[in-house]
Image (cartoon, rainbow, N blue to C red):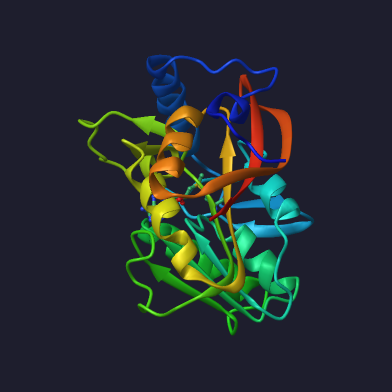
Length: 243
Ligand SMILES: C[S@@+](CC[C@H](N)C(=O)[O-])C[C@H]1O[C@@H](n2cnc3c(N)ncnc32)[C@H](O)[C@@H]1O
């Protein structure tokens, strides 16, 4: 289904809160993920996973599980996961038969966490993990059959200063990373490659749509469902980005 207007990106039973309210939701999410964490392991998709402090914990919302189930893994091909966190999607892709998986994150603890889980599940030979700000650490000509990011959807104001690694999992200041993801993502694809974004109703769909227009790309919704994330209902969407 093509999405012609930003409003349809958020069309759901979940009304989008205003910017300040969303920012507060984001602050609470950072606390929930970061504060007083004792678990060093979690279970998801039938497997147990290592969890390193200061890394997005896929147990507080359904996003990781949903996107990992929805994403069409390129069996025998290559996948780039931007913002890999604990590495669940990257490792599941390798277990599902992706020949080459590159997982990257701006948070060095997420890099370590993904490496641990790749070893734990016996796929370290085909999961390369990089610390990278979006595509920066990739070689200029590197291309992938599928590129995916479960993004930090809450738009932080221009003056926001990142002081904790976990904030990168929740906030994107001025949607600068979303803009670069949309603008440059297609150049990272093989000739038949596909670019996906895992988004949700806590994000700024209007801004996403306008950045897509500015970047000359079209956004199509592939999957959607509404679940609770802590105390708020959230609509999760797998979006595909195309020329
Ligand atoms: C919502 S979390 C998703 C984590 C993991 N993919 C999952 O589904 O459990 C978003 C991730 O993107 C990472 N991230 C944010 N900005 C980034 C950037 N500019 N470059 C690379 N990774 C980034 C965060 O550190 C975080 O791990």
